[in-house]
Amino acid sequence: MLLLAVAAALTLGIGVRPVGIAEIWQAFAAPDPNNPAHVTILSIRLPRLWAGIIAGGALGMAGTVMQALTRNPLADPGILGINAGAAFAIVFGSLLLQQADVGLVAVLAFPGAALASLAVFLLGGGRHGDAGPVRLALAGAALNALLLSLVSGVVVLRADSLEVFRFWVVGSLAQAGERPLMAMAAVTLFGAGLALALAPRIEALSLGSALSRGLGTRPGRVQAGGLLAVTALTGAAVSVAGPVAFLGLMVPPISRRITGHELRAELLVSASLGASILLLADTAGRLIFAPAELGAGVMTALIGGPVFVLIARRLLPGGQT
Image (cartoon, rainbow, N blue to C red; front, side):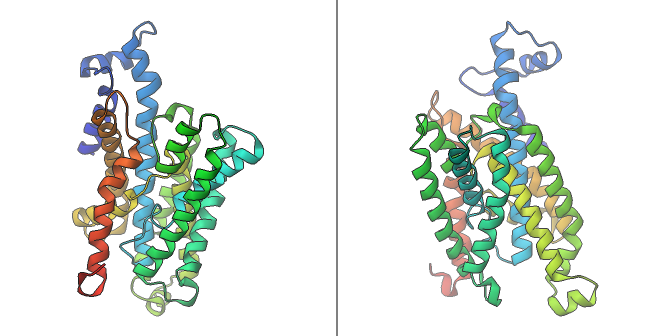
């Protein structure tokens, strides 16, 4: 929580025009519409902060649920193509409906995420019970590449294709003010509440199907509930920040080191860590090439790519990739 507070302060204070803590406080306590700093904080940086908290927290929790359900340390909404499925559904739906990719069109993220998660599960061999960690990751990487290629093909038809491409292919918090933040915050709270409620049953699944049934757990229902939670969390995150990758991969191992293997505590820590890391990545992206900026999704990929390779090396025999 302390890290999240620091990340939030940096998000509000750092930009093309740096703003001090006193001025940030004044912007909230006594906003002046004629003060450019106050306008910047309240109309640009504050929505960016909320988008980072919603998307980062949602992806952190979604990755934790996925890794717990599949017992796969490579499980991540970005790597397995769920982010890309949500993004493709929104972009393609907005093209068909001839509407902007906000508001009502954002609802399309949820069936897109659900269909992508089902597809990668079937492609990875889950139907036959042989969805190993590497096989599932490879199936997800193939689906992710296909869907993002389709997204790229659709967005180039837009007149403002560069900005749309940056958002729907790599993820960004730059357009946070245009996103349905309140609605997606409510969806995130629903997904988080469902994940926390299912946590003891998901832990029971790790004991094996027979023993978990003996404890009163119904594996099919728990897996369906977990899928619903992941779909809600991922859809909300993509709706406000685009398909940010690798965040759900990096956060769960750190959370487990802090909390141990108590899933409810791990989920709460993952939400805070995910939001903190995404906000810090966004701030770093604004500073490196200021006044231009790199999308938050680019920054998380720069960190998450090596993390993915390290985890994959540990899973394969002899550490070979």
